[in-house]
Length: 345
Image (cartoon, rainbow, N blue to C red; front, side, top):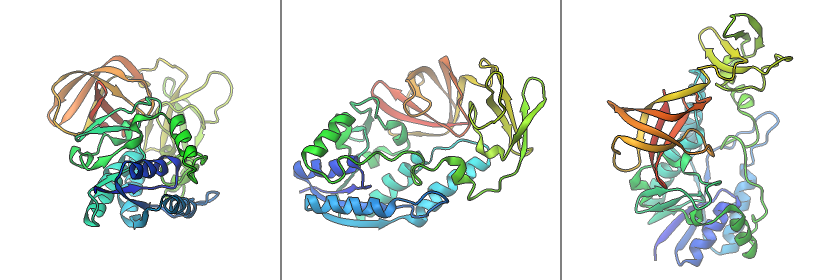
């Protein structure tokens, strides 16, 4: 019997994943990954409640249950990475790094060493012999967050929810009487829930006031409390008031300045060409040619011509994309297959 360790977060998706695999005849063990336990001002970390919920479901299902403590590695590989990227003026995605370094590396390796044959998670995606494919529910599809996982890791991974829509998953969980069937989905940063990125970063970086400058006129329009807190395309949180809305179109981290404009057609806001660094291919390196890309989770797929520049990639878009920031991930698809992607330079 194939032994599968299921990453159980205490939510409905991973709960149903464990239930379905048990029904399919796998020898299932539930595992809670203890990645982050730190409380923040105004935000109690829900890890203890999530652990209790995961345990309750494991008891309901009659499966073994373990806790893997990855807190130190998670802080180093995911949280510190995110903070450093923001300090450099970029816009990283910690969920992608978590999948690359923790769930499909550390969790996989630890599970295999502990006797598992495979791992499983509640991601909305499909995998066929190491090939990553979009989920049936294109609205919930999470391949964007999985593009840095290796094909070898995916050969040892099961995604049972890839064939279902989210409403169906809720119904199936209710039919089975799972304790977490009605539990709300977690929102916000992967490891701190509802708290905003500004509140989180404020715990680790000093807030230093600087100027908000009109890009076209050079006039100082107001003050901000740290360029680190702003990203390209941002409209809210500028507190400039009156008239047309302003959008962030640039920032200088050394000078701690934020540049804005009211011009929605400003060339800084629209990118017809994207240069990608730290490129990762899930399996084989693709050939140059036309593919579709996604510049953020749930963004519409857009056509682009892929061309190699040494180890990096240039994407020439059929239609310019708005508000693409350095540090963001761009994910590349060949039909329904997610082949990889890279970081915006």
